Length: 146
Image (cartoon, rainbow, N blue to C red; front, side):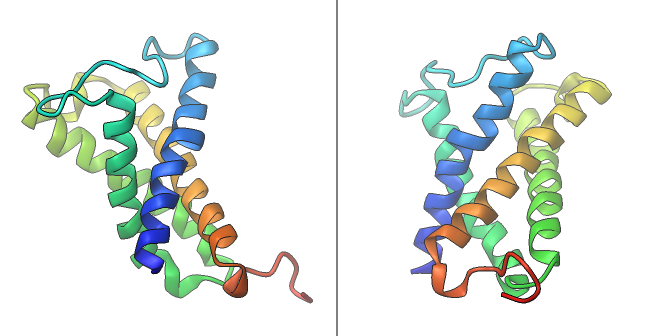
């Protein structure tokens, strides 16, 4: 059941946190990339944002495998943000981009990498938060005394 929750946490975190940060960055003129892209993706022609959210769900399961053991400790949030920022960014820019015919690293400089880390770090935080909300019996204490 935790894997299903983790999938939905990753899916929803993509739509709320990842795309929310992208909306802020786009609105501030930091990136030309628009949030909630509805362009159809190959081969199923689903909107790009839903494809991204699906993969966010898969990544949510993987992230949960890493952070679940630290639930209840201060490391939970740090791991969620750091692993969330680094792992999907590395795979997207070093593996997925070349598979799609794009240059390794997405062809961008530091701005692209920092943007990826920000978007995916926000996504990781969202997964951790949603998993906490989905599993209140095992929720992380807000203060040391609670």
